[in-house]
Amino acid sequence: MNRMLFGALALGAALAAHPVLAQKTVLNIGMASADAGKLDPHLSATTPDKALFNFMFNGLVRFKPGSMNPETIEPDLAEKWTSSEDGKTWNFSIRRGVQCHHNYGEITSADIVYSLQRAADPKRSGFSSDFKDFDKVEAVDANTVRITLKNAVPSLLGLLTNYHGGNIVCKKAAEEMGENFVKKPIGTGPFMFGQYAPKESVTLVAHKGYFRGAPKLERIVYRYIPSDASRDLAYTSGEIDMLYGKGEQVWVERMRKLDNTIVDVFEPAEMAVLYLNTKMKPLDDIRVRQALGHALNINEVVQFKGAAVARAAKSVVPIGYLGFTDDVPLLKHDPARAKALLAEAGYPNGLTVKAIHTSLPGMLSTIQVVQQQWRRSGINLDLEIVEHATFHAEIRKDKSAIVQYQAARFPIADTYLTQFFHSSAIVGTPTAVTNFTHCNDADAEIVAARSEPDPVKQKALWKTAQQKLMTKVCALPIYENMLVWARRANFDFGIKLEGSLNLGPVVNELSHFK
Image (cartoon, rainbow, N blue to C red; front, top):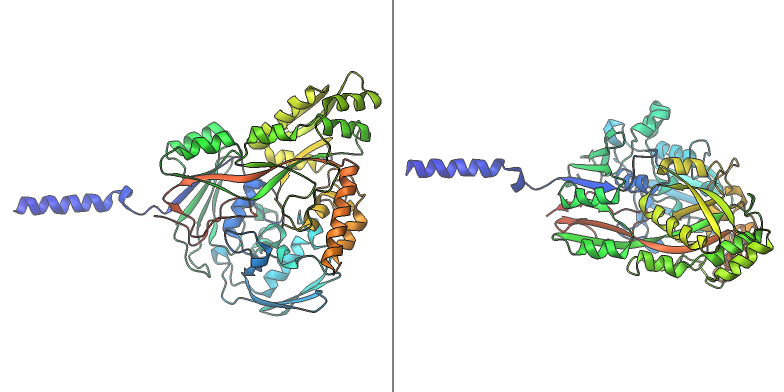
């Protein structure tokens, strides 16, 4: 009897100590990148960094978690807000008691004003052009912020979500750290920075004082695994619980066959576009740009990616964005016409075009398909492959004749047109954003649409802008790729995942292992 009791007690102690039986509280994520970029939400626009920022920062407002519908934007650091009839004056009431990470104090109006002024400063932000219509951001009192606009902007609230320049940083931390802020970002989100191991990982820890409640997860280990094969192996071997997937049909089908695995395919569709530098030879000749368009087989690229994850792009604005139109001159696949245009332009034996390109696997495979297609028409695409962060740095120095860029933005035409095609966004200028084409042909329509109160007239202006840009062949839209991630079936986001503008699954205080 005593021996039986002793055995039962010993077994119970062993079971209690066994880690497998304890609820898992560490989420290991595998990201397709060699390393972190700049861990400052106002400086980095890379896909790997954006997904990470989503765990650490809040905005004044936010998209409903798991959604990217502008109509369901809800309070975040701001509890409520009001706006004037002309849409130029906005007052935000700031939530009380919100704590910055690592004991940097309570968020007040001063932090909001500092963050938005920082986001609007081209020396401290990659998104300054988004805020060009801001006149003043001021603290009315410790818990009230007033934003005064020079001109009404389409969906101001979209600029104030926890996305890009809308991420709120803690003033005291940013000022104390200066340039070192990129090594230890301080926000207010459910998870806070813990440790960075170069070319290996970033570890986040639970922000126990999070205003919506302490996270159920203790840590997130965000690992950098650039190789698709290595990332897949890390998942199948149990080293990671979630991974950035390949936006390809074969990958989705293979992963869905694995036990205890869910594949999430969700919005936004990142649109892959080839931006053509219209000021750089030989692309300064529209016949050469047209030849590139006719040599491109969009349907073949979509087939390569897979219908479950990709769809053909129809314009320089993504499908479904407010203001999108497919009534544009989209060049059709015609290799013979491509060769004829090259001959007219003085290249009867074909030509070589050099481009800098990222080593990020999904983007690299796309450009390699395009490379093969163009070769059939006598176009040799000479690629210089660099690490992803280097790629972003180099293309912003206007060094590449062709830039393949994949992006998802706040889903209205103005955002995409402004950032990629307005003259103020041309790379190499003081207000540069991501206009790699040097096109400025639609400036008038882009500007007029921002303050046009009539929705019908506003959409007409956006339509004209797209038609002008496509006629000049400033860019070649290729396809739109849905986001693809895979995870353990026992990991629950805590919300229904339909979309995430931050390009990664929403992991917040509700996320947990079952």
